[in-house]
Image (cartoon, rainbow, N blue to C red; front, top):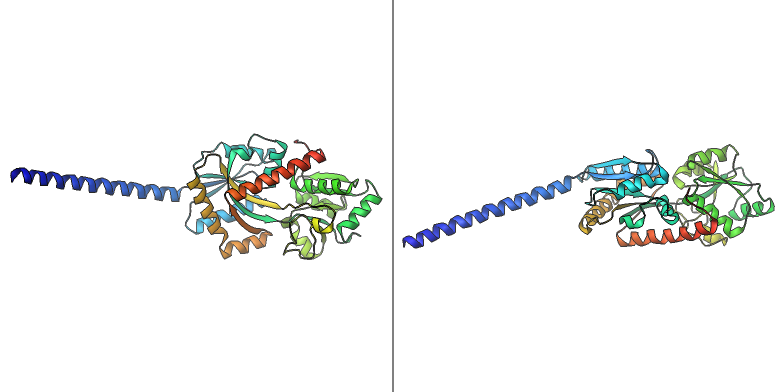
Length: 330
């Protein structure tokens, strides 16, 4: 009986120890989960503050924070045609706490082999949004269509000057696509961004600018500028009367300004899924849609492997076009 009592007491003590260990483990797991949820998320933006990529990053960060997600910190790392920020992000710890905001420059750099952080240095997270790339002229110009502009350029070689933010940008590539397809002889003038290129257009220093829609939307709505064509896959809801380049019959080419997020290579799949969930939840809110509308941005929300395939296809297109046009990394 005494031996039985000792065994019973021992079993009870063991059971209480096991319960204590389980409780401690559960508490530790809960604390770890809360720690992961509250961990700061850094978005490296390889552009200047106030730029389109910076604005979209801050809009997302604000929405994620309002929804009780992690604190989002925006780190602007401009320079080197975005390669400085890209390389900083590629070196970050692959634990889901750091992502990189990517746009067309990321894929142009990959096509030109510019910098040391290409697509293989990252894991695709989400394609966030896109916006059209219209070819614009002054509303007082004689050209009502892209075909009329091309005809004038053919009739007067070297007379017309095109501009874009560039060189070696997606907007510059669009100009080269038009030149290759039509064999027109025009001057190309690169500017530090679309805004200064538009200033040159308004001043009569150039005659046409391939632009990003958010920069020119107010000019288009006021009637100061006229859009002749876009490179979008289909007509934009924002510019229903503006044909696509493919529609014009000049050439088949489809491209838009895109914004997305990638994470350092080897970031675990669960971390990528967690990031995708945060982003998709933020983008689906009415508040975010309204803010995107104000900026001329159109939500996409494609995440994971499909976004990776999208990036590969764009890089392949840019490799082909930049080779044919003789565009090299500067």
